[in-house]
Length: 258
Ligand code: G3P
Ligand code: MG
Image (cartoon, rainbow, N blue to C red):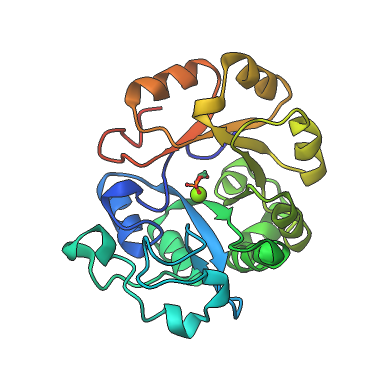
């Protein structure tokens, strides 16, 4: 139900490095992480970049929506200085750069599709899925020829809070696995997973209960939690049947704890 890595660095490398940057992935690697979650958003001119906030101001200097800025403007910005002088000058990472880096370093990916504006939902899903699909074309073709469990487990999972974005991703890259992200598990979760052809439910550990976890697992889905930073809490949700989680604290939680 979840053949993928069990413990992932959140937003690239957790909170010890600027989120959604190559510095983040490098930090995860230093702590032994070979799996990461990161967020993908589109610029106005439809360049997929790794970005969490829909607006500048926290991790990027200046103001304004990411969806209203072209890549040429964003590529010049400092995406690391906000966390400390050691990271000053770190650049915004494109999805292409992120995919290349992860493939080169053997980092498994949970690609969170995060539309920065509602009107970009479909395009964000479509373009993110196409970019990932291009990188995995060879493996996808080989898997169609001959199923192979290890190969299938190395495929990235595409996830999103946006049902619309994930539907678009499913159309663009039907063979890539999908996880539906929810903060609170809705009553119709199973119907939604079925419509999306999703393999897993991704949810906040804060709103999960042992009963809900049991239901998701009994229905045959993978169950992924965000964002668990306390080793004791990680042990608790494991008891509930949770398959995997992401963490900000790659220094506190061993990548091999599960
Ligand atoms: O993938 C789960 C997690 O990343 C969702 O929360 O806001 O950190 O993207 P957020
Ligand atoms: Mg995320």
